Image (cartoon, rainbow, N blue to C red):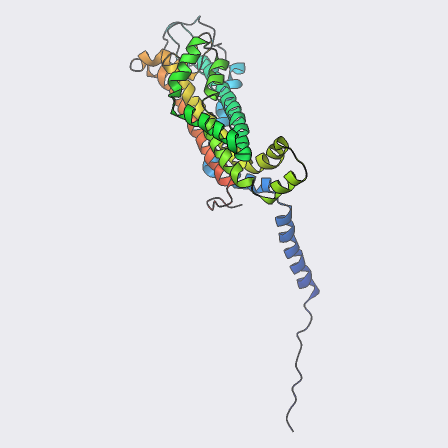
Length: 315
């Protein structure tokens, strides 16, 4: 008679193992479920070493410019010190021809340059996003008009045109910021238009349109939030571009005018001393370079963090 083998069934898993498995899988699921897009972007940015280093340097520069004068013993308006004093403990960067402390003047110039760059970035980003989104969403005549205006402004030598306007109207720092903003929105508008053309075909936009949502509501509630990554990156990079543009205009004497000052003005005033007293020239020059480099690296970090296709920095 053939042997009949009774199939054996595996015994029940230990309760501790089952509970541990459920706890482990539940923890992973919960952490993945509760992590929002903003948290993922933040984690990516915080793990971008070059961007975080640049951010720390930029924070130090901002503290130097805005908090430094509160603790420094000399004012940028004080000209009671001697002319062209060499660097010392009292004057780490020496003094200018009229006896002003160079470090105090550098703090003031950095303040104005940062303020100008931020105003330019905010105004240019607002103009570029609104006009670019309108052109991409409405198309037709509006699209053609905005794009022809963009093409016209892009072919103009904006440094020369900006210099003429500033020279004619006013050389105050806010006028310089306004004029520079008028020539920095075009690239942002082009990028925003291209993204709007793609997003306008999505189902959520069609659904909003079917529900009776108006043009402005669709643009600001549905389109702009989905472009926040590119908008943030371009706004950041515009700050660096504005710093260099303002420094260039002020260096040739067609930007910020006295009694206002900026890093470009300080570089221009002390350029004749680049050989005999190089610290007067290289101090503000290096600050301009540091601001531009740090903001560009921060922009690179934001781009890598917002772009899900990036693999350099994992979430």
